[in-house]
Image (cartoon, rainbow, N blue to C red):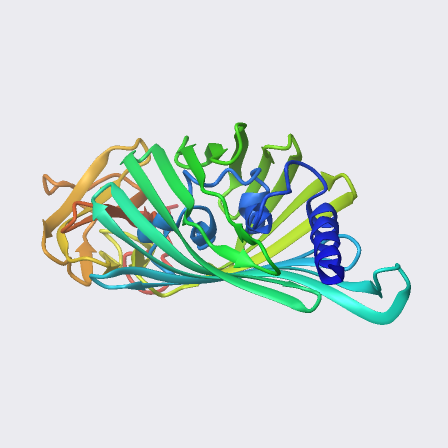
Length: 415
């Protein structure tokens, strides 16, 4: 009886300190707190977007549509010696799909030990709730992917511990480049955790989400709807992400407790991203910080050399290097060169894998020289599943004012 009372009190205290709002009496509620400062800044409405490694948490199917290797780490200091941590990684494999792993931990320390009469025992106690996840995701069709999480959930309350095993199942549908639709069945196979006498069973939660990609993905509004099957209430989460600059993201959101969140993210050195979010909770302010590293993997990239050339100068052509590595075999490719008015002036295309480079001589598809100005190279490839992948925008400039021979030209006027 003594141990049961202590465990019950610890669970109530930990949930109160960590969440301080909402319906947090259900088993395994720590798994609903969120992951990644980016999604937390958008009110945790991420089921329909799921486009970074935190998709393992929100909708595992999102990993299937991501190409690089990724590692993400987050640490949050909460209240009264309570901390929350999240770590995740993903590994895409050619022709097979994407594998991922994640770890979540909510822990609180420095509880004063008491006996059944509330007398101090001189021992400091701790409470820990944690979960480890293994994920696999792949494309089913060109615009539909699925993912599954297998997870181990552990609760360690003072000197009593329990372990349970469960599974999540998610789907992500992208009918076009502007809309994402997500569906996630959290605890589809529920974990059962027994601490003393009665086992706690994590409830099935169904999440549906939509994400819109507007103005070339510079503005992304998201909405999630959640229904816990043991609860009659339907919960709504909202968020929006905007990019005033390519390297900078600003975010705002509201979760089901009507708690307003804000956040920002910075991309730097191409492979690194730091995200921050802030929330005002019942017990005070909460700051969340995460770092994500993306490198290698599968991608389509273009690089031009030189970036400025002149068909009548020394550098009469530019070479566009192509890096095209996809999870599934390429069946079609197309490289477009676009002028400042948005018109395609030159197109290269083919079947199977594209060449490693293409040379452009500054002429259009009719063989006529194009005018001076800035041009953008864009490439898209299609794999055997019908999925289309786009490259970065590589800029090239044509300037006939460049010297036509080495050295500086001096033009002298007759006197």
